[in-house]
Image 1 (cartoon, rainbow, N blue to C red):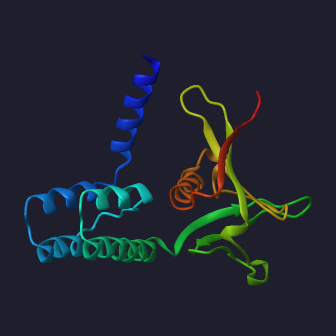
Image 2 (image 1 turned 90 degrees about the vertical axis):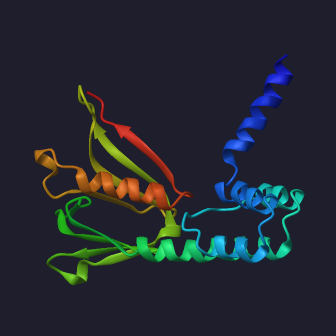
Amino acid sequence: MFSLFFVIFLFFQDVIQRSEIVEEIIKLYKSGLSREVILQYIDGYQKEYKLSADDLIYLKENNIPDEILREIILHQNILGQKNLSEKFPKEFQNLILKGKFLKKDRLGNILVKEESLEWHDSKDPSKNFSFKISAIKTIWLECKPRAVENFCYEINFSTFDGSKYKFSDFNWENGENKITTEIYNFFKENFKNIIYGIEMESN
């Protein structure tokens, strides 16, 4: 009984994870539409997708011609590049860079590019710095427990070489955390290889 349930679970899990365009192409092909029409449909497809090896095997098992397979893969890459160019660079303004040791806090902006994070100091360009996105090991929010909703006031970056950077909204001491939260969500959505977390202050 358990084995049967497990097989059913895996089946539905596989169906849920299937790329939407895969099912649509199979449906169009089996309806008898010409290759030219299907290729035009793929060309106009605007939803971003990422084909897995299972998707490609599934398409092949359903007799989808190689010409159409190549077009689906090519269009996937084109869409991915287009969406990246729309997302980056992304700027987050009016932030506080928390000072280390005896250094004072700094006011400035963060500029996130596809491959790097840049800090632009609002007063002293010599204080600007940057590091590679690939160098980031962990990102986490520092939060204070609240009755209704936790107050996450600080975002932390830890790199593989041991460096740490802390940022907060300019007016975080008065309860503002909008930009801090936006940065965390932006990274979590666009950079999947980084470890994310939330750290709660003890009462």
